[in-house]
Amino acid sequence: MKAIQANITTLAVDAIVNAANSSLLGGGGVDGAIHRAAGQDLVSECRLLGGCKTGEAKITKGYRLPAKHIIHTVGPVWRGGNNGESELLANCYANSMKLVREHGLTSVAFPSISTGIYGYPIEKAAQVAVTTVKRFLAESGAAVDVTFCCFSQPDLEVYQALLD
Image 1 (cartoon, rainbow, N blue to C red):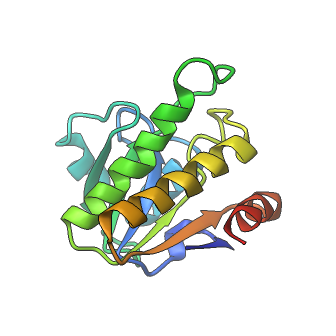
Image 2: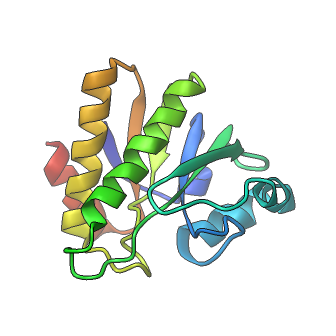
């Protein structure tokens, strides 16, 4: 596992993870950037998926992205930390990793789910992300190259501290 600072839409991996909204039809932040880069065909496929509940994950083709697939997951909105947010966020990472394994993928890049407009504190979110993915890899024995793709230098530093 590693952390980098990059635009997730530029990564040539088997799958990138989209911090989607429940409609899966695009939005702001990472979600909007992925939809713009992938093109209209992504919206057409997403319309067939019937949305996605918080903590769940669904997979589509990558279309115009260098990534072969997009795994869409809906993170929780931060409401103070006592409303199941950490469990829901952990489910985002675990369910995304299950799709990676089920589809025989060997590389995946995650954004920092729920830390943008959903307001999840980066330190808490990164801890959930790293812990959940480490546990999944240890328990499944899956050989997957996992990248945490950070938008900002401060976020990158939080992830790097957890990975060192």
